[in-house]
Image: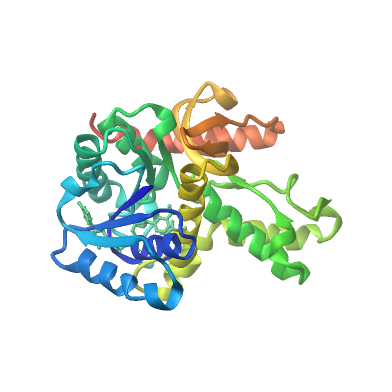
Length: 307
Ligand SMILES: NC(=O)c1ccc[n+]([C@@H]2O[C@H](COP(=O)([O-])OP(=O)(O)OC[C@H]3O[C@@H](n4cnc5c(N)ncnc54)[C@H](O)[C@@H]3O)[C@@H](O)[C@H]2O)c1
Ligand SMILES: O=C(O)C[C@H](O)C(=O)O
């Protein structure tokens, strides 16, 4: 299997690192437009092979024709935000970057499955979808796995229990309007509403929604990369190994949840064909209303882009 990652910055390098650790592909290619950057990152990672025991190949290059025969291509190319910025502030600059990556994928890897990571996430997946013209099953975005991991971690921390036993999901847009579902969050099947006071749950929900911004303001330059890289590789792994994991991904909705024409985070089954099924869970009227707000915000964003 061949995994390609476009953008050898913080998140792209983290993706490559986790891909090696999890041995998800025999060939891992890193691409960037900055001369030498992808080669340097790939070489550094390749030199861990004798210590770690990875026998696959890791290459770095600026030659995008080497995208050919990729099974999965991850797009992490794009500017990260800095303190005081919203993800939406990156719309124009990253739309051009994602457009150029998508054109190369369309040219060199027309059969691949594409996972977009660049922000503002849901709008950038839409750009990649429009530019490649790939079927909707083969274009998806990473955000829900990261946001849900944050949610699960904060719940585990509050209860002092193993994070492994916490299940929870965050749906909707990868932005301030995201929806950490309280009703379905549980610890080994026990609803968190039975374990935590409402006030603490509200605090956790708030911290989850602004989890990316919290890290941006601490780092001062750049944004989170370690967990974003692992979250992306969880998705890639499910596709490359045909695991049929149920993960929240940004996918094109065409009537599901009563919404059409936008990419939003919803639970899906991920396998070798990409998005194999969108799981449509019954939402409460309040949750459905929140999802509608996500739809409106996404449509406003993508509506300002020209296609
Ligand atoms: N979806 C998520 O949950 C999530 C999580 C973390 C970061 N992000 C986003 O991922 C993106 C990357 O973040 P980062 O921290 O790695 O940034 P970074 O600045 O460290 O890396 C970005 C890389 O993209 C490269 N690049 C720019 N234009 C390119 C092009 N046309 N082709 C190939 N490479 C190109 C740059 O040279 C740079 O190396 C940002 O937009 C960030 O907001 C999203
Ligand atoms: O917050 C950001 O800008 C990066 C990413 O979307 C995140 O949630 O960590």
